[in-house]
Length: 219
Length: 308
Ligand SMILES: Nc1ncnc2c1ncn2[C@@H]1O[C@H](COP(=O)(O)OP(=O)(O)OP(=O)(O)O)[C@@H](O)[C@H]1O
Ligand SMILES: [Mg+2]
Image (tube, rainbow over all chains, first blue to last red):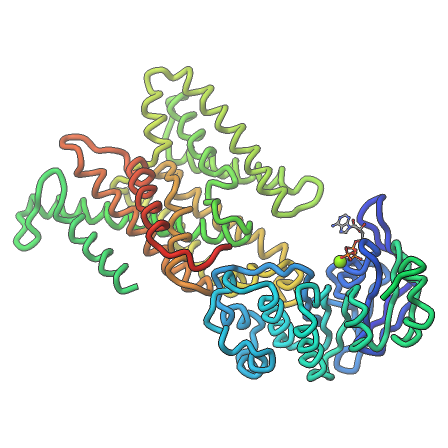
């Protein structure tokens, strides 16, 4: 459970994100909204990378605590990595050697483990990033546009691998509505720094979508 | 690895036996022993300098995510030169102390400037550029009024390996210890190759870790340049060659970079001592030249199996 207080956050005069009280209790939760609506900003607030007051609270080991980055595995929209690391070196950064082979197998990465990161295509890189996130032993997972480089087939694989980890609480920023419809359970809709929708995925497609995207948006 | 070590050992023997006079390593006379001691001292000195410059540069390259920087990044080298030049200008000594003070002042100036209005790496790097450029113009200004010693200012900015006194040796040991501190942060450096948020979620206290690493490497670099002057190139070249040879974590990279750095420097020093009869070329000059040629060869001969 993640509890967001009523608060606001701004970088500068140009953009501010206003948040109402939100309790995120159903996962996977999707943050949906057009470009520049504040999805990435909200993800970083949830993870405690940006501080707001009053603070965001997360439930961990039965108690509510002030949010801290270490409760989350975070996948940025454009992860940075050392091109010279092998895939195995990179995955080891998560500190979880025990499950490396299992997760690599799940994502069909086994034969790539010895390759240098700089030699992979964007789609394969994306899988490697996802593998590292799954390997990181945290209760919550924040992902920023994880499907951006994936073809439809790879997206299906991604959904399958994420579904194999129901114990992880995913919060995913995305504007990929097909991804939302097959994986999301709860939606927070953002527009121009305001939360304009909260509800189930089903409700989102029935009535929320027009508040979030411009009227007449065709799927 | 084995090849590198072999090269290094060969360099060791070559550096002992070659010089303006040849020395037999088997049955050296008393006189030759003194000479051998002197050459050994230089070999060790050159190796330490090469290794320190490589380790500090590797660290700075990782935290700034820029493979082309070295320990001069934050102004410590120009600070050291200015200190030295000032001590020549004012005719007070010891000049090493002035150089050290100069580089410390430069470092403090960079950190102060860099933390004005919030602290992040980019600000710090920009502050380093500013400090470097201000100090360089100060150096030029003073050397303009030092007509007679302009040449020695020049030679000093090139970097000179020489035998060291005990107190200088202590300073070098300190800089080596600082390098071990860097090596002990290998795990954190590995994580710092990820984005800031990922590093934070893996438990790295991003800001303080980065500032600690930058401060330690700049300090180690400044200790070296305050004694020996400025060596360009080694710091940039050694880690990049190491990256070509090994893949993966910083522990390995530190090991390989420091061996390569030590090797480059030791070889250059032998060349500097022996190539021209009767005089000694500044080692820094040889390093920049020979190193650059070697670097070019190295990159052209390796297959392009990845790009960054
Ligand atoms: N570091 C920053 N400094 C200043 N403004 C920023 C910063 N990061 C984001 N912004 C601004 O905040 C607004 C929201 O950005 P945010 O990245 O949260 O949008 P987003 O919903 O994730 O968009 P996208 O779909 O394009 O990723 C944008 O107008 C952006 O220009
Ligand atoms: Mg975004």
